[in-house]
Each structure stands twice: as C-alpha cells, then as structure tokens.
Image (cartoon, rainbow, N blue to C red; front, side, top):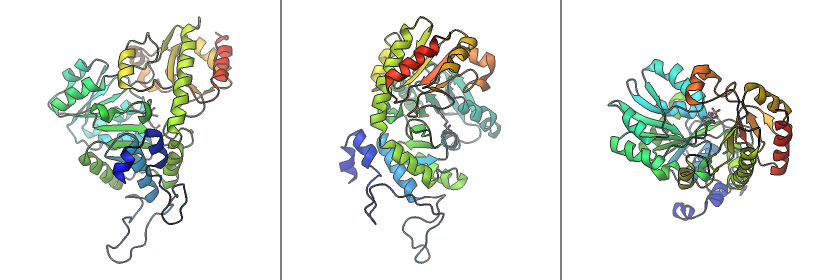
Length: 386
Ligand SMILES: *Cc1c(COP(=O)(O)O)cnc(C)c1O
C-alpha cells in the first residue's frame, strides 16, 4: 500500500493518503475520535491506542497525510505553529547554539529570546539569503540552523541547496519554516533539510477556522523525540482540529493554484501602480532572487508586500478596503491584509525593524481565492485614498 501511494500525485495524496475510508463503517471522511482513553482487553492488550495525549486515531491520520505531502518519514502535529516550533527547540539542551534567519515570523524570535534563552539555549540571527553567512555563524556548539524562505514580510529567499551543503558537512540540522509556500510549492526535505515546520493555521488548513502546527521529519531519531515531546509536554492538536486540517488539505492543490495565479496578477498590478513605490514578490522578474525562486519553488504563492510610502498612506488605504480584510494571519480563502510594523513585527521595536528594512509604509497582502477581478477592483479603489 505504501509503495502504491508514493507514485500518486500530490493532489491525489492530499485527498487519499491517511484519508482512506473508515474500515468499520465505510465513511468516506476520517471520523473524529473525541476520546481521552481507550478500553484495554487485558493488561497491555490494546489496539495501539491507550491515551489521547500520546496518540489519537484522527491525529494519526493527519500525521500520515502531512508526512506524505512533504515526502517525509513522519509528521507530528501540535496545538499551534508556535507549539510545533517550541517542540523543535525542546529537542536541544542547555548550551546548544542555533543559527537563525534575521527576518523570521515575529513569534519565533520572541519564543527564542524571551523564553528559551532562559533555559541556556543560544541564538544568533543572520541574513541567511547569503549562505556564506551561515557557514561563518556556525560554532562548535551549533546544533541547528533555522530558516524561513521566503521570509515574512520582505520575501527574501534562502538557497536551501547551498545551506544544506554546509549543514551536512558541519553535521548541524537544518529546520525550514515552510508555512508561506506549503508543501505544494516547496519541499525543503528534497533539498536536504532535516525538519520542516508549518503553522497549519495558514495554507494547510486554509479556512481561517483553526490553529495548528506540524513538524515533518526526515529522520526517525527526530520523529521519535517529537513523539516523546507530544507525550511529555502535551501541546498536541485536538481531534476536531486535526479533522479540520484533514478537510482543508483536500483542496490544498486546487487552492494553491488559484492563490498563485491571483498572486501573480495582484503583484503585476501593484508593480505598475503609480502610488506603489516597491513590490516584494518572488514571481516578479525584478525580484533579486527570481532565478533562485524558479529553481527552488514550483510556484510563487500569494504573499505580497508593498510600500505605500508612509504610515499615513498605509492607514488611509487599509481603512478603505472592502473585499480584503485588515487582520493578522494569512493563507485563508479570504484575502487578508496586514500592517507588519504595527502587527506581526511590532515586538521588534523601531530600531529592530529599521535594521531589516521593515518600514511604516509596508503593507502585506495574502491574496485569497475570491474572484481576482474583485480583489483588483478593491485594491484599486483603496489605493485612490493615498
Ligand atoms: C503564523 C506563523 C507561525 C506561528 O503559527 P501559529 O499557528 O500562529 O502559532 C509561524 N511561522 C510562520 C511563518 C507563520 O506565518
């Protein structure tokens, strides 16, 4: 069965892998098992499930599905993206050092610096878009390199093949946050990464109706450690939330195709608009890493950041949008717009934002799957306010 599934294409695996009909009733959707415990037939005699913090059949199915989509050995799901990232750094121990990208999702450095640093982990932040910086930052006690590509919000890429040639030589593991591209457009394990993390809250679930996180692993050792952490720390995803992701992921390929097509249209439109001073989107020919984007990803996605010139301009436009909604998060069927300086990257402070190029006029858009003409009309009328 396993061999057969491997040959199926992505869209088919999304719908069928781990999503086989229920053997008991034939139900075509995976049942939700809202149970904390399982009856045992005798001491140590059970059907593989003992207690739902350790394992739950709905969760098992989701983990099988997501492992298949990332081409991984195993997947472990957690209560949120941050819980998944927390589990990853919990595989380290005091004195270990992590080299990180300097343009990560805001919650990640907050966890690293304000929580994990107190437990003796050390973090160094560098521009990973130049792989040479990674090599220079690795020390004797470095155990992990942690990157996001493309980054949030500036859409800078890191060359995964170049970085893994360093991490493999130095025997350091590479972790990639693949939330922005989803496994449909980017497969970091195929470039040699060791673990991939997603906030399933975003494209994987895709409907803005549940939080979740997943770590997919290339090695049994990491998969075992993370399963142990599910049991030991308990930040697991509930059966209902697992089911939401199982449902959402069935349309991942279809949604990502629309996200990508509309993303390209919106990026083109913005890049020609007289009030828009700059557009950050890897699909544009003038993106400095467009060639790398074409090599490393199979689509460009729907995350676009653009410069309106000032906080005042950004606010004027954001107050006028009607189809698009101003809010945190991304990757849903609806178009979401956010203001990085006051939302996702507020915790960095003005100096921190300045250092990586996040200005007050930047606006980030997660293009949804509404009719793209309606999205373009909405942006057009909103940009008139500037
Ligand atoms: C949202 C997000 C996270 C955090 O995930 P939660 O599900 O909100 O905990 C991590 N990384 C990236 C890139 C994200 O967009």
